[in-house]
Image: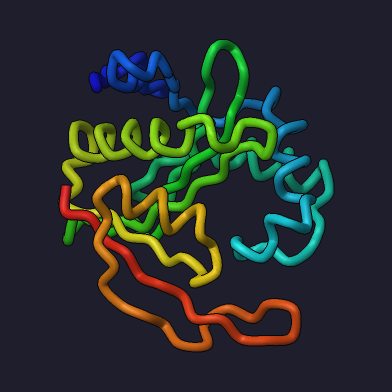
Length: 186
């Protein structure tokens, strides 16, 4: 697998030769409004995100305008869009960025039409390479609901180690679920 910086806002990763998959990570643009609107207003995603309500197109447009060129050192977060073959396949975030301790949380979403094709792994590997090469990160971490088998499998396959259990962490359909904490030393 190789990765290279495309521009100050774009990053690319190509998976192993057996998997000819290329993903470019880039800053959000106004043209991303339709995809972001669809993702943020999909109730099936709310259970694995911090969102639990619909967002207006106006609010999302403002979010894109305010965050597309934001400085990760000031905002402590970075949202990148992932493209492959001219199609936006998802987005990936760094959050709780801590430049002193060289760590950040990671969250990702693969468009429902693009899942189970390797895009999640390609996005994660591109972000890791970007985090090391350009932000000098030492580690990434994430919290995953214990019933989110797809995300648990992705992070485990990507080399993240489970390092804790957060009991009754996620409210879901009138019950409480544990969440699993993962981290990867880069």
